[in-house]
Length: 103
Image (cartoon, rainbow, N blue to C red; front, side, top):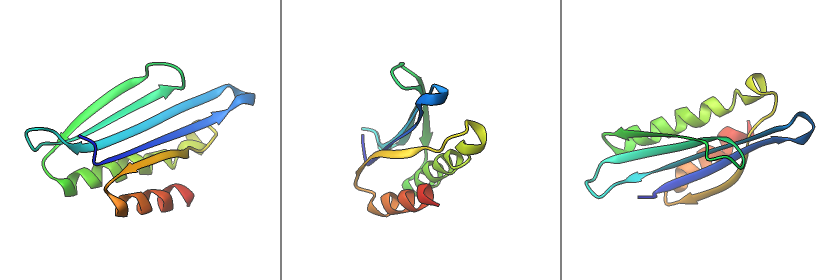
């Protein structure tokens, strides 16, 4: 399924903040576009949310929207997310993600 995957973490040992956020996007065997997000405390199973979308363009917009929300982490949890890993074939999404998270 994987066409694009990103893993983010927000860690602040002094305040006991250990957050993880992952997004995987791609097509399933039937040609549907799937976005799977897993988030929660590092070391726990976390929460998984899966969304089915009609096409690749809509999937990219959805992934970008999800990553945009991570930008507000300093206001919400007091620390920003850092990119731990990016993989996949969406090279333009990889660059957008790096730009988005570095602003």
